[in-house]
Structure formats: structure tokens, C-alpha cells
Amino acid sequence: MPKLSSYKSTLKKYFRHRTFRNIGFLTIGQGLAQVVSLVGAFYIPRLLGPEKYGIYQTVIAYVGMFTVFTFSGLNKVILRESSRNLDKIKEILEATVGLKHLFSLFAIIISTVIALFIDYEKGTKLYISLFSFSLWFKAMESTFNVVYQANEKMKYIAILSFIKPLMIVPLSILFLHLGYGVSTLIIINLTITGLAVLINYFISKKFIVFTVFSKIKLIKSYLTQGFNFSLISFLNMLSTKIDIFMLSILTTPEKVGIYALAFRIVQKGLLIRRPISTALFPYYTKRNNKNTLSTRELIKHSFLIIVPSLILIGIVLLTSEWIITTVVGNKYIQSASILNVLIFYLILNYLLIPWGLYLQTNYNERIVINISMIVAIINIILNIVLFYKFGLIGIAYSTLITYLINVFLNIYFVYKSK
Image (cartoon, rainbow, N blue to C red; front, side):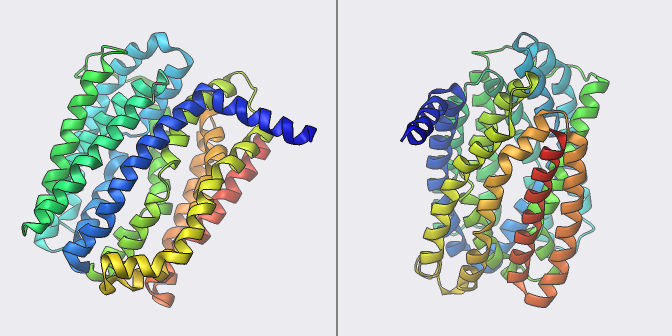
């Protein structure tokens, strides 16, 4: 009994902490957002059909790869430095936002130009050039989110993360019913995302007023750290999110659509992954700064974090085929078997959070880069080999193997760095 009461006391202490309140805000916001998004994840592919849905997902996956060229890793530098000293957040933001504008423009240009040399249909290339503008919107949105994160005011991120899909999904379904296609979905997405950036700007002024269009400043330490985090993000994308892009080159849009349906459903299972990571990042930064974050605490966090994924895995394994055939249609029946494999990726993804954050917040970017590079190379090789051996489900096998290696390496290097 003493052990049980001690465990309950520990849980109460965690849930009273501001970090866990923030996780609660973000989880509710993301949960509501994902419920709405899940409706879109089922009905948009049903209305578009596998081929057009494959094209739509190709555009999203392709443009998403160029997020790294917006210098996205700079966000973690800003957050880490701001969390250590909130009084300097205005100075830090104004020293970095000019670079974000410059790199976002570069990302838009390079995304559009490279697409011209890939064997996509003209319509797909046009969609890519249009959707590339989302790169700037997302770069600005993440800048404002840093303000909320550094001040540990996550409820604003939660509210805005819910409003976006609440507007995008119903409008997308409505216009598809009216006979519109992929181009309209992209325009709706861009419009709502742009409005979200504007709303973010006005809300963030409650906490800090900074010049959004500051001059470009080159601070060596920020550039170096930002490059490292950006490289980590890019390599993580190569190890976990490149599957749809590779399929768009290896096979037909229809098969891309079939795989993408399963992949997007699994992504919804990560609904509290970002809230947990977002809330824990400043907490881990401060604890690492004081050298008070123990391996035992990382294990406790891992245990608490993986519980939701275990529940989701059970639900999906029991209902996947029935849900897909009933809600989306028999044209996507192959997605069910892919989903049953990909679902195990959830537990590995959640398990990774504390260990990956520990390395990132403890100035071990070089270790994280090395791990990510190894895992990215393994994933690309396995994607090609297993696709030709097993077909679409081979890509799912590749994802599981890759992430298992990723988790093992992160845990190993955390223990080694202690």
C-alpha cells in the first residue's frame, strides 16, 4: 500500500504542475481538432476517389518536405533561449524573424522549381506551386507559437489549432459536394491558414510586441543551432514522412491514395504527440539547465505517454476493415491491412518523446543529427527494397523497422550522455 499511495501522490504532483496543465490544454485542443480532421480524413478521400486523393496527398507531402528550407529549426533555438530568459524574447524574435522571411521565400522558390523536373502531371505541378505559399504561412505561425510556448500559455495554441480544421474540413466537404476538386481544397487550406496567421499576430501582442518585418540579422550562434535543428527536422522527415513522396515517384496516384488513407488515419493517432512535446520542451530545457532531469523521470514520462497509443492500437485492430469499407468505401479496402501494420508505429513514436527531447534540450544536437541521419538512410533503403518485395505494405514494414531503430538509438545515447 505505501508504494501505491506514493505512486498516486506522484501522479497528483505531475498533474498539478503547469506543464501538465498545458499538456491538458493542448490535448483538448488537438483532440477536438483531430476529431474534425478525422471526418475529413474519411470523407475527403471518399469524395475524391483514390486517384485524385493520391494527387492531393502528393502535393501536401511534396511541399511539406521543403519546410526545412524555411529554417524551421530556428524555432527551437528561439524557444530554448527564450525559456531560459523571458526578458530577452523580444530581442531574440527581432533578431531571427527577418531570416525566417528570407528562408521562407527561398523554400517557396526551390519547391516550385524542383517540381518542374519531376515526372508529375502539369496539374500536379501547378497545385504544388500554389500550395508552396503555405510554407511562409506556417513559418510565421510557428514564430507566434513560440511566444505562447515560452510564456507557457498553451491554451492559445490549443484554441487556434482547433479553429483551423473546424473551418477547413466543412468547407472542403461542401465544395467537393458542389463538384469542385483538388485546386479548391488547396485554396481553402491557404486562405484559412493565412487568416490563422493574422489572428495569431494580434493575440501574441498580448504577451510581447515585436517588429514582424525586422531587418535580417546574422547571429552566428543562432545560425549554427538553427541549422542543426533544421537538419534534424529534415532527417526526421526522411525517416518518417517521406513515404508518400517516394510512392508518388515509384507508383500510380491511385496507390498513393490507398496508402495515404492509412497513413493519415495513423497520423490522427498522434493527436497528443505534439501537445506533449510542445509542453515538455520548455520544462525539459529548464530542468536540464539545473541538471535535475533524471533517467528515472524519463522512464516515468515514457510510461505515462504510451498509454493512449496502446488504447488506440486495440481499437484500430478490431475495427479497421469495417470502418474503412463502411465509411470510405470498398475502393480503399487495401488500406485496412496497411493500417493494421502502421498502427504499431504509434507506440514507438510516443515512446521516443522524452528521450528525444532530453537530447535536444541538453545541447546534444550533434548526437540527434547522427541518429537521424542513420535512420533516414535506413528508411529510404528499406522503402525501396520492401516496396518491390511486398508492395504497399512493404512501406509500412519499413516505417516500423526504422522507428524501432530510432527509439533504441535515442535511449542508448541518453544513457551514454548521463
